[in-house]
Length: 544
Length: 77
Image (cartoon, rainbow over the protein chains, first blue to last red):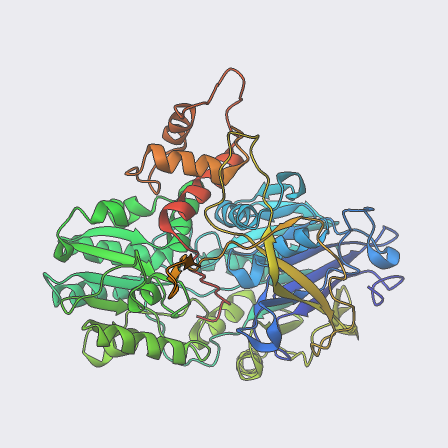
């Protein structure tokens, strides 16, 4: 990084993607540590994707690894810069870890990863799903909250936050200063899974001295008091009691395991068995088990598979599935579209969508609800649940105004608060909150700004143009996965998409020819999912 | 059989144990099912490590639950 080489000692932070200039997504941060007379070393925090939802033709975009990571082919970083010492992951959402499989697919080496057990399990799933050969997987170290990792001449402490299982904030200390990197967070002492945020630890960190806070802004404009998960559980229980005897389906996001626990407890209160349907939700449950989080025990009821639940009267089951954002191929969408093998919707069915819509999902969610209602279902969205007097059944996983104030009050940064992870309105709201507490705040106009933390204070060191990569799903084939020896293997039941990668500048313009880093993995033709049809011609000859 | 052909192993598991609860199965029980698969010679094939076991479990889930339900979540919820 130009503003670090040869510069005075300091702890330097640069956000490569995920700020107000392009909104939320693709989170990727760089921390450089320059000591007195010691070689410059550095590490990354998070490497996520930004979903393009069809825009520009890319499935996802993420910060370009050019000049950051070493190529597998020669072990060198383009431009000759130092190789990062590590990659620290704050949690398992795709906008924080989703690019890693693409980096490996492109032929880059991912440095040693430091993550919580749940986050590591989900990353492993991501790499296995993407067909990345095991010998390319990065080395992974599991870190517990409270533990400190020595990385690049800094000490990185994992600090528990309330967001999702395994989510962590980071206290990054060097000789020059300390940065608190919040990751995604909120405060809710009633979340049932894993460790909870500890305000006393945050207060102690503040007393030890925090120079800069890099903080989540997503829900900062929200002035309503947050709803505790325990209250959501009670409201869900009342809602279920009002639907006694009816087949009941609840749609959540695959990663919302705390909500799954609340739904399970509410189901148990109402004499219903709990079942789970949907690949991503089932995978999250499995990952939780690998991380030592017993979702069934927390819910107070066994978790059945959809197949097991079919043996029970539908009115005695709560089926929890995916599709709270009406994603294609999610459980609720497949049910709404009456796809083969999907959950059945009848006029007796009640569907609960325990998730408020967001701007990018609003239209799709409304269309899904309309389809479900046309099938005769009674649909209760998070908005409708409040209107019908059941109370809130959803709370954002991000800090609202009250939580942001609490975080800043506990940490009391001496230097600067830098809001991230938000659009312009969200970041401005976060910044105003900090300033209202007497904390200087800086709103970054663009990604690539470098901020230096030193013994003499916090300052802007400069700004660099940052580039990104657009990943487009290929239409000429799918990945050829490793096959078992002849006679033992079998055809894959599902195809792993193959991607092509374009180098883009910060505005999304292609600056490098397609496949600037071409994956060497072979492709095989896509298997058609269309049913075979035969047509009998007038002459009686059968053709396809 | 090779343990790292996750989809093939998952297919064999699902065929042999279609009613198993892959959500709540412990690692010990999963290993027990794996070594009981037809054609597995534990003398010739070492037990899968934890990462491989996890990959097999995820592949089994994918097979049993069907098409990817595509829940890209950009963290804005």
